[in-house]
Length: 320
Image 1 (cartoon, helix red, strand yellow):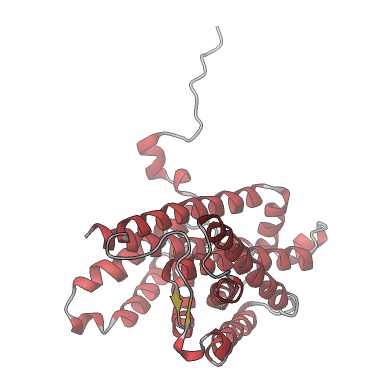
Image 2 (cartoon, helix red, strand yellow):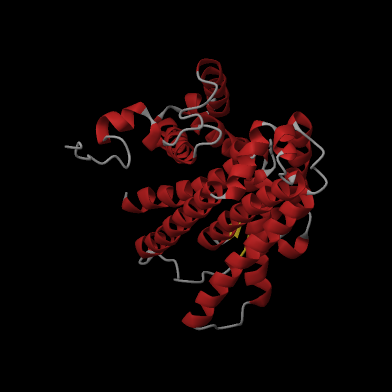
């Protein structure tokens, strides 16, 4: 039971990294990307290929740790490169047209992986365990180690994106979301900031993909299909386009609903899983189009302030 709980926490943490990185593109910059699963796949396959083709035979612990770190770098670099390749030609596209273009990119990455025999083709790619061997005796330690690493990476992702958004660069991204014309008149370089958002968001998606490959050690192209991209978008939309804590909250809630609650239902109900989530999206968009938190963070909500008080408030004595 403990193993399955930790395993679910590993997967939801990977999804949190993916959702936060997509929110930087869609929620804070105002673009509409549907190809985030392509960046996820690029990072996963780049990390796997790096391990498979460069790993020394019979390595020691220090070598495996080094290769683990370098595989993360390979995943980030590959996904960020794809983000640059996609971002530059798609700058002139907006709305539905950008969504279609990025959707096509995501499917191109999956199809290339499916038809490239050097990375396993349709059978998938298998890499060796790096940090700790996985067996019946080490399952808890294995999952616990990766959960610790993933939580640290998720916190780093959150802090880096939050710090970007609080900087002058983040204000420029939000200005682009609100009104591109006004932002350009104020001197914001639309090309540079849009490409930067794509590259940074794609890089964090590649980090999630590299961590996923190292944890699973076996990946298949079908795991990076359009449904995966829609689920990631769903977490962002339902959490609030422009709310980081809302994205985290929505990811946890929807994952629990999908993987825990629905799995306890009869098979007849589980077969309608995708229909259920589509209806949920429709209902939320009709009743609360801004998502759970909209552009607010959780500490800015009335409920949070009622329970914990205003963030950063201090009682100052009245002047005599």
